[in-house]
Length: 196
Image 1 (tube, rainbow, N blue to C red):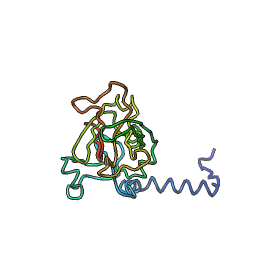
Image 2: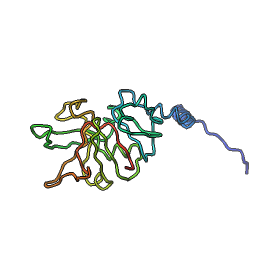
Image 3: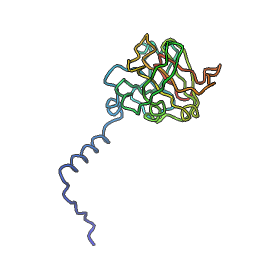
Image 4: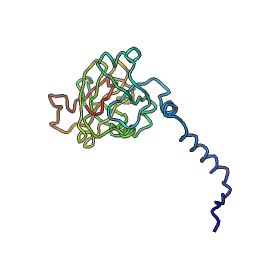
């Protein structure tokens, strides 16, 4: 029996796919991170105990809003609007103190955002642009329809209008957030810490 392997000719499509796979595997981590980097304005940064990242450590001069909130990290994952729209979306209809009537909110499911970056199943903290915070336990996230709303009644949430993101869910009757911030609806979310 011969130890020589016989190589069968590959079809052109299979050859191209294998070549692309080889190139992707050969890319250094920094090139892979650049491929996942947002192409538009970043609106959400997630750090903590996450499996995937697309940016390095916080530069306090470039990330002055993060630094002002006393946030620091060695690595993070940054999302732009199209990246968030590419995840499974959810809707929540709720009456909030900020709006005169019930509104229908739409945005990526929180569990999908965290799953995309292989976040650990731990407490998660949310920070708004003005420093307001809230947090959720893993069972809160898995047991409800929490979303990071990008819009209300079809209108994008802008900065100064509860945007860029509004952490919100459908509250059952009698449900309210804890005095310690657990389960708060947080508008103006721009940062999430996994492993709070």
